[in-house]
Image (cartoon, rainbow, N blue to C red; front, side, top):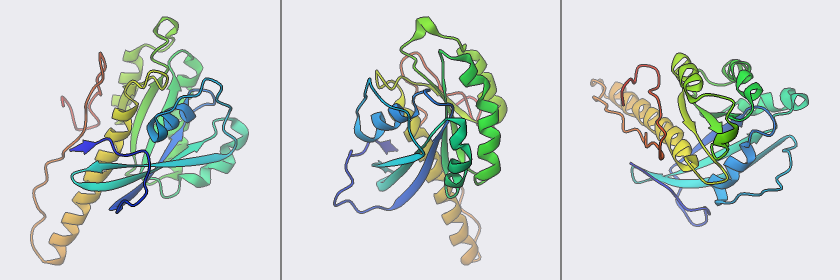
Length: 224
């Protein structure tokens, strides 16, 4: 079970720290998604991110305090070489496109390839179609994104940072999946050390769709 946590981390005992990276083209709303999740803020005059920034927020998952350390990587081509180093240590990634700009979606396979070449092979990835509030300007059909996500084994959600739609759900989906993976590894390691059999594990995933949205199943997790 995951709950939204506080927007400040002061005086909290932290059980886990998970690094998450936001990647995608420039101007798709990565910084706004981060700002909405970390501080519940949205700025209409947001400027392009230069280099890399990060923010944190602590959430409660299964009675444990999980600090999300979220890195916002600039989408401009000239920063690609700089930001590649920041994939190191990431256990989660949010692959963001602007649903009103087809080109930003068409670039997703390239971003995914870069991510997979630099990050841990077990990284948890969610595909995010941002700016869902601009439905009348939609250039990327939901079905196109769903099909790509299912083919690549990704979670998927459409979000609106402006209206705070599905932003919380997207982060909690990634964080809870990472939490389950980490705990599964810990349980298996403990069982191995005691020469016992690994415990039978049933995943507890926070797959909570927002209004009119759904999160297609990740690979081998059909029909949640």
